[in-house]
Amino acid sequence: MKTAEFFKTLQAQNLTHLEKDSGVSRQALHGALKTNNMRLDNLTSVAKAIKLNVEFVPARTEYNLMASLAKFGVPVAHSKDGNLNLEETVAESLKRSRTDGVYETLVPYLLFLNLEKLSPNKLAAVALVEDQVNVLGYFAELANQYYPHPNLQHLLKLLQPAKSLTKEFLVLTTKSLFPELFEKNELALKWNLKVRGTVDNHMQRWNKWATSQKSS
Image: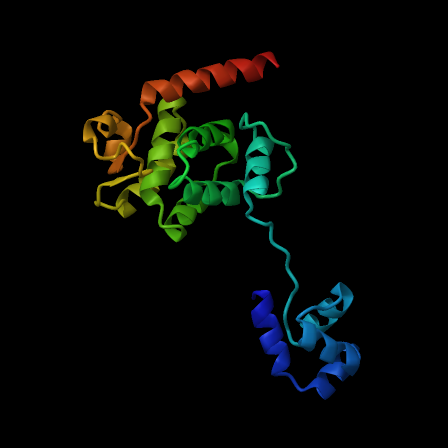
């Protein structure tokens, strides 16, 4: 439940009963309704009284995403204090990949670095929820081309039946009117995506990254 929904629910409560059940004063409850703000200890008590749990979720900001990518080993120039888990990091990256081509390079390498941690079922669910099955399929295909692994192959099998048949550009650019530039990447075309990046370029870049990380 989001903040606005919580205070709407709170407004519908009998404050006399809520004061008794939560131990929070009527004055504090009225103040919370007026400002849509509440002290954390009062919030916890009120939520418990109306059969709710307080839960904090990581902010999906660009800073937190980049810090989370760095935390999982992707060589981006950022701190490693991100608090998104692996599935959340993939989910947010999939959404941003539609407007920023850098994620075409980052996400497959993220998958490669975390092969043993991957949950194919969870990642397939992420792609379905975000409506990015084709994008994750392509990224998993790239990662599996770079380093074949059962988890990636299982993920691809899960995504295949849900693949969209519509052909589209991964990222629209000013050069999208020149189709010959976007029809060289067979792995992308396999997932009905048109991209600028070539498989060989990605492989060469990841080899450099892997070599650099081993020597550091």
